[in-house]
Image 1 (spheres, one colour):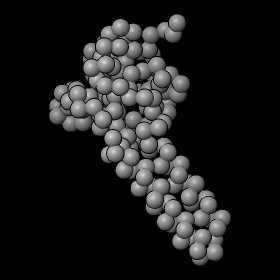
Image 2: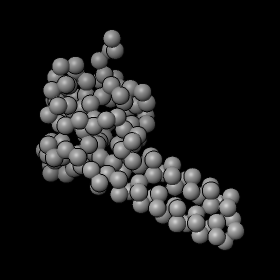
Image 3: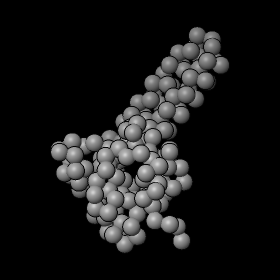
Image 4: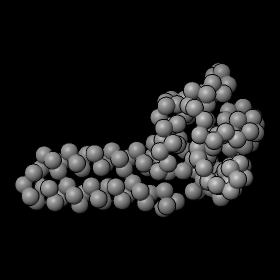
Length: 145
């Protein structure tokens, strides 16, 4: 769990250090702006922007019932973030598995990618798709009821 927070916390701490230096040099406006930029970067790279992750077996079970795709992702992945942002509100309708938290999810990704942990890997009807177009993923969602 802590591995997912290394990048966001590093960004926040670096931003705070640089902003403190700017503030001490007498430039509080630039310090505040820089701190805001680093805080936004930390937030975007944190697990908080993704829907709640579940385990790979649970995601597969739910997918078999409701037909929704399973997305294997990890924090700090720009391609995962791109998929999440471009899916918008539709992202909440997918089953998300954080491979850094779930060893079974990491194993499923490695099995689909010749041993590599390439994410996002989207499982649709049992078939893995590596870094698919977000519009295509959205089209794979069953109609909402």
